[in-house]
Length: 97
Figure 1 (cartoon, rainbow, N blue to C red):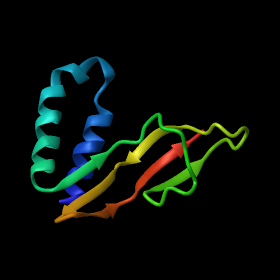
Figure 2 (cartoon, rainbow, N blue to C red):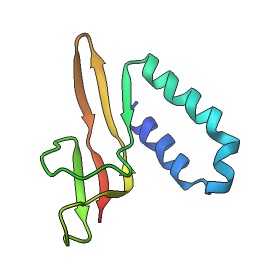
Figure 3 (tube, one colour):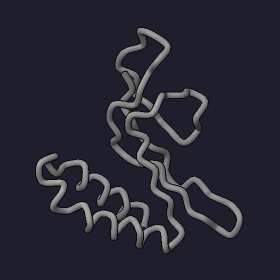
Figure 4 (cartoon, rainbow, N blue to C red):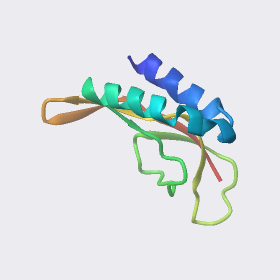
């Protein structure tokens, strides 16, 4: 399932911004179905980068300054809810500037 989620995420990111509105409902439905199966998909785009976050693998392009932000997400963070616990299934792979 991890690979399917990642592929859906990549397709969503490759759609031109002008065309995204046409598919918004479809992607929301897919992510809802993933959640119903216990998967939690997190897109950290725009978040402040914290090197202590174990759910993110970063490629840092510019280390000037302390306020590094995630500018591109290649793969999302994926968790699987198992009972009371969340298990990290996939680390996000991001670009930080």
